[in-house]
Amino acid sequence: MKSEFSPPIGRISQINGKCISLIGNDIDTDRIIPARFLKCIDFNSLGKSVFEDDRKTLKGRHPFDLEENKNASILIVNSNFGCGSSREHAPQALMRWGIKAIIGESFAEIFYSNCLAIGIPCFTLPKKSIQKIQIYNDKNFLFLEIDLKNSLAKSQDLDFQLDIKESSRKMFLSGEWDATSTLLENENLIKNKFNELPYLKFSSN
Image (cartoon, rainbow, N blue to C red; front, side, top):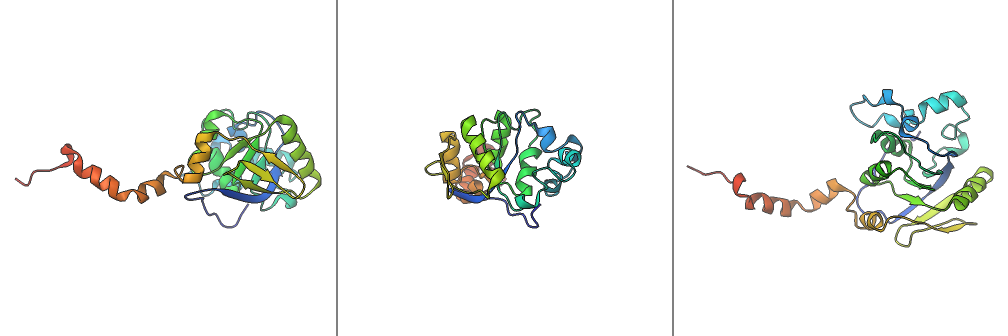
């Protein structure tokens, strides 16, 4: 787990990082962050508990425990990743471990939306391409450069045309995914609208 956490803010156009592979279909949100951790009052402690039960079962052999995967930030997964319950804690836990982008065969819709809301782009590739990356990453150090503007991922030996929803791509490039920053940037518009609303105007009498 990373010693420091800095959440993404504003426009996201480039993500560079080491890859970590997690092989298996239908990995659900309960495996990503078990239900007993949902009673936390904030998300800051979730990173150390990501895949807690799977990691205990594998006794140090889980990808998120391997020394060579320390400081990885691009997660490579298979199909229907993030299925199950709609808990927003799942992408929050991944982000606080250090994940900045996910590339997979497919994603559960609510998980995808929860990732979008906190600044984690989710890209898709065909099954053969994902397997190619996972096999390569198992034998080599894979560092990918992701260009959101052109939906490209490349390394020294590999390059892929990524798929991402056009609406999502535009939100990352414009920064509109970041609701807090968008509100702060439009403070004057909010104040003007506030002053226009008749039911918020109080009589001095």
